[in-house]
Length: 123
Ligand SMILES: [Zn+2]
Image 1 (cartoon, rainbow, N blue to C red):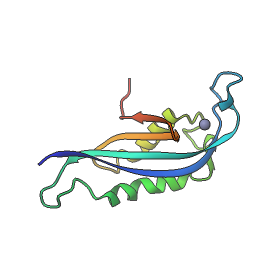
Image 2 (image 1 turned 45 degrees about the horizontal axis):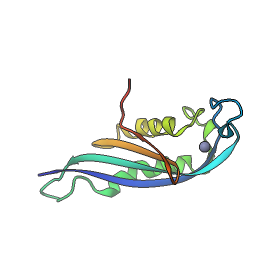
Image 3 (image 1 turned 135 degrees about the vertical axis):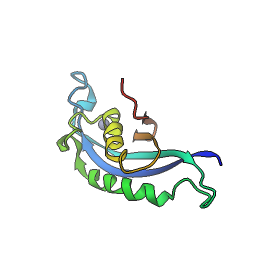
Image 4 (image 1 turned 90 degrees about the horizontal axis):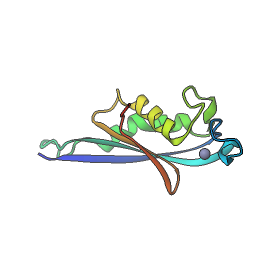
């Protein structure tokens, strides 16, 4: 038996602004992103099924979250008033952690080349 990490990606379109960005920063302006996020789980391969988890089981809990965020103004959603990638990654983690086994990482892509990884760690 060996341990694997499985990852599945979801996407949504949303608008936001970052009120805590410095005065004059362009992210204070209302703008939108084609957000993507990866849900990564980690665990052992079950010899009976030859997988750790059915990818469908990731989708069944994470797709509703992507649908809930799609075509919204994130600042109006409780907990996302300051919706940076950092805040969004933790928000998604909190929504998922009780409903999925072996949650390991949430990665939020705000743009094609900007991403934030969150591992559920709190200081
Ligand atoms: Zn932005």
